[in-house]
Image 1 (cartoon, rainbow, N blue to C red):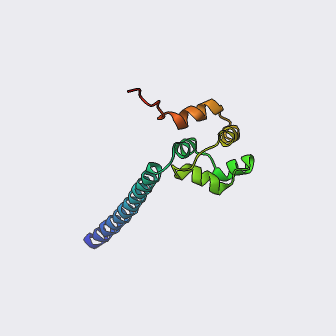
Image 2 (image 1 turned 45 degrees about the vertical axis):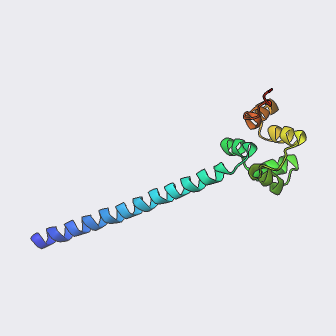
Length: 116
């Protein structure tokens, strides 16, 4: 009777160890994904962060606006890239958002030069 009990306990322990290993891999994957996403968002432009926050599909925006996906990626990732008014307006229309909201979100850190 003891050997059957021991085998069952070993079986149960193995099951729990398997589950624990599985869960620890899931948590590590989630953590790694979070770190990856955090690093990406640190390097995004304001329009990139806005589009990311809205969870929009850039391929769909490209299709609806005629702005290439490479241009959208450039606008999202390179601070030196300048967004035109026409692009802003088209993107706002494509994501069903008022253009003034998009403008406010991407320019919220812009300030006037202080007078001396």
